[in-house]
Image (cartoon, rainbow, N blue to C red; front, side):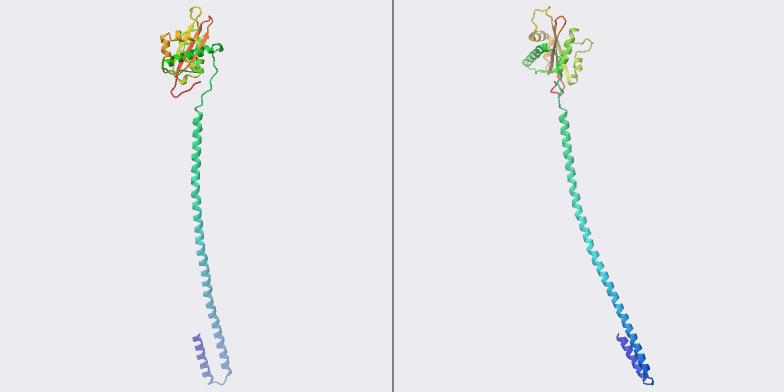
Length: 269
């Protein structure tokens, strides 16, 4: 601005100096007006140029401030999600452990149920006789330090099958030629046994003066025979069955089967 004013001053001085040499004064006045108009236009342009940088500066400062504020908010959201995922894992592990324990306990309990006892085949009028024969055999075994043989209906039914065959063939094999212990397979008990033995007697009223009774059968006929006594004295046996059959000639046939169960099998009906 100072330079412009200096130029105007110089210009005016030159005009005055020139005017002093001319006679037409109004011309000086017109030139002076023209110079002032130019000066005014230049001042307006300078002011416009000054406003532009101020507007740009203001816009840049506002944008920078908003961007900086948004970044920390995004970081906070990610930290909150991480602990929620970690908490879910231990809950799944607890459920699996509980289910495995229940399934194992139920299966073991089911396999130990004993089979139901079958119906006894011994004729009703001879049940008391058979039970007394079994009692006397156990009385003898216990008195000699041997274990008592439990009474089994399964084995008794096999013994009844054999007693019914004795009027036809009085021997330790069956009428079809097979061994006596196939009767144990016939009643479905053979797979539960390890050893077995058979003793048998026959009493004919026309050939002996002895009174037929359980005591006579055990003490005279069975224990009086070395071969029969050896089987009764066997310490391995723990179950037995006793049966009787009366033949057409009124002969009485008694059959006794003694067995040892397989190891670990502590009960058979």
